Image 1 (cartoon, rainbow, N blue to C red):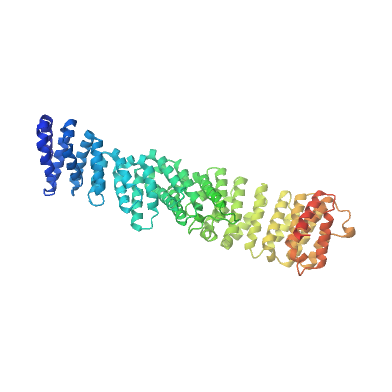
Image 2: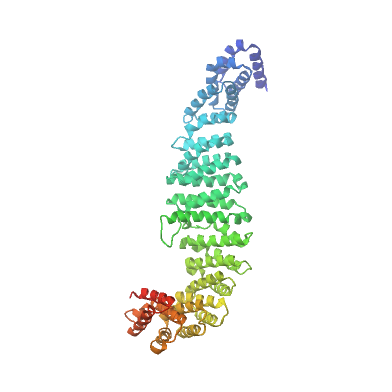
Length: 611
């Protein structure tokens, strides 16, 4: 190329005759940068200028700096991209010779022309591509608030050339971008998103911790726009910089930062965090999802604890779990943990976490996921897993029944069979939770007679702790679905339970559960059966004499339960005075009993009656 050869010749001349040639060459070259000359002419001038700068000594450059700086500055804003590229090389040579003086002259000039000269930004790109270390001279202008669409576009453009040189300056850049990412204006937001993507792509492995530190600070900021922008930035980073997924240690940090925002007061911040969590979880390989069960549980727990300080209600819900498709981002993590967790501990924690998640989810948001959650849980509980896993799944299914309601009707037969089977499990906690879940399930079951008869039979004839589980399940069923039981079955249940009290006086735990169950049953018993019940559990005169302390305790427990659950029948406007007198008489006698347990049981009944 003739221009290259000519440029080298100029360089050789300067090396040999620099002091004589430079005063003549520089004005000629400077004049050659005028727009009157064609593009290839101006490009050749820049090439020649670069060769001269390379060949000149430091002292010679210093002497002619007043002429060289305007020439390079002019070339960096030239309409021709080729000229600007060549000018970038000339700047690089000049910078190496004069350093700070070059920066302080050219950079402010380029920055001042950014909004008036469409080519100034690319000139700045050429400069930073050659010398990324001068970035600190550029950032204060571009990262100063407010972050306009123009500044954001400039940052996006420059980030592509400086790349990892941006990392030490994330503390300046990211806080400036956060509010812009939450902007209402479409142009400003789009420009900020482009800038955030460019900055994210520039971050290398050793800069991720700096990024996470800034997003953490942003998500904790008092300004909701900053919190929203920090969550947006995290999502953009995870969607554009795949390096983060090569470092498992960083994913828990991201999940922790974002999930805690599910309880944020600002709706936009919640939505941004929810979207970002979806990006993070969506990029994790399916086989690795169970590794993050603990992190998801801790993140949701942190959001719950934060919300609890503001909302003391029993049915607390997280804003992030009341959005449409609320469970989409994190449900796969927990389901995979339950289904294919590497250890029983992982499966147990996943099941517990799933229950906590469901409990904090709004009913409308939960409805689309009922089948997706319930099916796998039923399938897993039927496999041979440790009792801890089964207990966790049963607890989650109970929460699903309470929150999911009629949406679970397709699973009624399977759930009932599963719960009844678990009543025979060897682990006490499994039996207890199965009994509780079965009672809740019956609220959805229109036909409960067959189950009530089976439970009565089991309470009467089963062996060992299974009897207790059957009694607890019967108690729960009567509480939730007593009105659906036919009168003949109610009468049979009453007779069977009274027989258990009579035949099993040594099993105190069983008898106490049966006594409480009889009190619940009293509310729906026919008159004749209610009279028999009161006669059996609140005897008078000679019938009461000679009863053991244990039996007197059961009588008191039964009557206390009766006045609690069948109050309208013993002290309401339609009640019979005889029933109330019998109950009051029994409870009054318990307060004078020799046994502390009898007095305590009677005191509970007195508290219900308010006497």
